[in-house]
View (tube, rainbow over the protein chains, first blue to last red):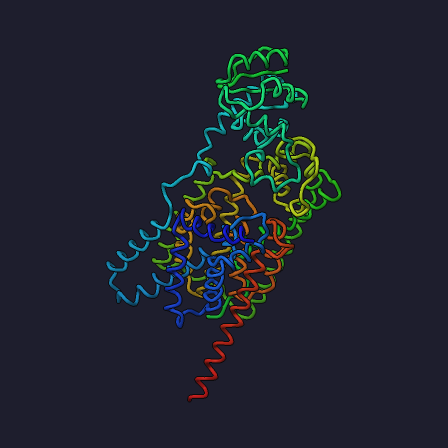
Length: 270
Length: 307
């Protein structure tokens, strides 16, 4: 329970860190309460205010987190807060009623205020603060898809059971569901683990760490990895080009094939 | 100005989306529980969709006919003034820029999502959850039953079958545009609830909402981010279409469609045994409505007492 409360509070802090729309919501609610008597949709204002407070206070936020199920984390409790609607409602009222009346038809002042308000809203966004996890992987996806197309061409319709570095496996099944993987994205993307009761045995986790480790820093032996892969009926292995020559030798011996170059990787096809 | 009781074009857009979700759920359940292949699910989906949309259009036509006999006229029957035309143009430009942004397909948020893999697996094996979408191998322990009944992967799979589109194109580029249209349909309904009979304010709200969607696009968890980077996800559809639409229905007192919002959310998002955000919003709005009515009544009585 203590962890739930901590998550609820830390969630609010990180929620307001990326952008300032929650702050815009609070200002909007303040404006709407000042104009309470002129607002006909009072139930909307009361509801939005109550759920906003409930989403910020750790105790009520924890209750909301339990209500939405543990499958989702803190930020999703804000689904019950009509944030865009409330901010939009307040800005529209400000622009079409408050501003019209207070400037008494002075168009220049109205336009200037409108522009300042738009600028203020734009500052609520985190423009420029892009994170790599969210997007920017388009080029990487295209490159992997091109490489997989070349791989399929080389194998000429043969079934592919693949073990490769993370960046390749990330897009392999989205490119072609005929490709089988030793482990999928749920190995490193914890959000995906809730979609299945299956879990990977410790041996596969070791192989994942081996594949992602820098040369010479692997925790398990090359021989163990390649033998486990072969016993799991993997017929296609891609190794990063910086793997050591002795690793390549070991793979060639166990698989009984020569390593070929494919993009930035060494390819072993059985 | 009294609320319009007839279904507007915006209502029809959102309701069509909800009906399609219902049809997809029927197809999905037949796939998962009766082990029907995806090809058969496509026929079930098509049949249910045609029936549901036909029923919706007939109901709308009947309501419009009754409304016109009673003398109710829609808001779109008068000509646009200059400021309204300007607002409409501004809204169109902002919405078109968002459609363009989505259509480029370069901006997608894939972390924690496996929809493309799931749909590809459905189409590849012609079964619903026949293999683990992450590896392509058979499930060892299976998947949670609550996940099993979520119908969006089947919806995308049957749409891919019907329109012969690649799953990644449909999911990452085409469907988010439909979600965007549904979002603006829901906000147009909300605008009618906020400003009944005032088209200029309704258009102004739509312009502000489209601006807020751009603003929210840089922060994960905001409506704008969901719409522009992951418009195919159930949580996004719930947050930008179903929740605003449920609020608009509460404001316009069109209670008949509220259960549809709750059911649609149940079909696309993992909820607490059906108690999702839509139900919470509807209950919250109802309680707030009762509270404000009581306050108003109390005030009225006090005013009456002093007079």
